[in-house]
Image (cartoon, rainbow, N blue to C red; front, side):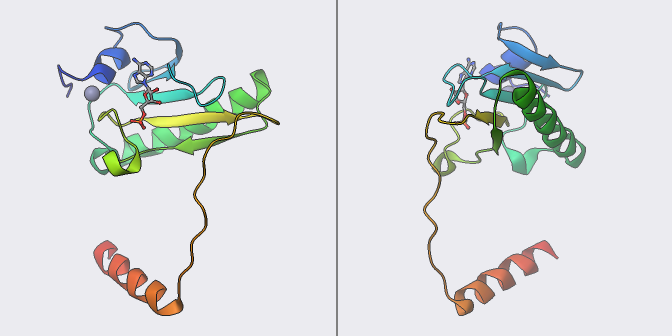
Length: 139
Ligand code: AMP
Ligand code: ZN
């Protein structure tokens, strides 16, 4: 299903032009207009899913596989030394466009700094409590 009010639905389905680097029946991958580094790419499904929690399993597999292919192309053709695969879910997590997308961000030697988290601290009791809650939810 598409959402008439969603800009990424329009881009993914070719109604709004984009710098497309890959397209098949289910996905379009485009260059990000506000790139974190040269070649920053977004993978967009052609159907509307708000975020990862709505994306069906087979689409998940294809999206991640495609991210790997795009990352390989970045290393081969753009001289990237590595790449990050980033996927934001929810406003607090940095999501600004509520149509599922995967960022593939090439990283270069001496390239732009991209913020990463500062490692925090924990204690075994806290880890055990958290692990128990998630294990229960996932079983
Ligand atoms: P997120 O913050 O994870 O929701 O990512 C949204 C991304 O979409 C940002 O990196 C934006 O720069 C990018 N973006 C927004 N509008 C467009 C557009 N029309 N074409 C290409 N990239 C876009
Ligand atoms: Zn959409």
